[in-house]
Length: 200
Image 1 (cartoon, rainbow, N blue to C red):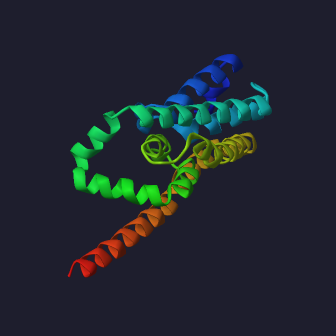
Image 2 (image 1 turned 45 degrees about the horizontal axis):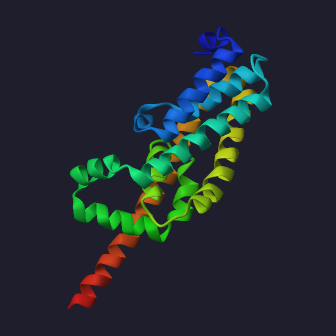
């Protein structure tokens, strides 16, 4: 992997990374694209003098933040994602998910930047809630900047251990994502139990 990266010209690497990161956070195909690995690769190139570190960090941040903005506005006007999710999970389940997101949308938008797949989907779902564009930007942009900068610097410092760092960065989010899922399920179960108790 590192041998392949070493042969890429700086401008081409930046162009490819920007396109991948925008698509990863802004388009539905992004659920299949490597976001964190792309930023780490940029950092590795910066560490070997192919691109400047600050250029790599700004490019990664700008691409992923722009993609999230695009996703938010698509969620405002595009029913494709909703139709797909409703078809997969059912109208009632999706309505409950939308309701749960609406109650904690700010924290969800901020945390989603750190995880693959949800980084693609949450901006679109946020666009379907009552969250304003300003609030979305305030919640998303600082975390996107921190995420991009941290991964670029990890790539810079990784050196020969690039593959290990890449794998660790990908796996780091799994326990946190699992904890978040358990919390959401617990909140949903408690609310459901309360609704059933009130209906009696």
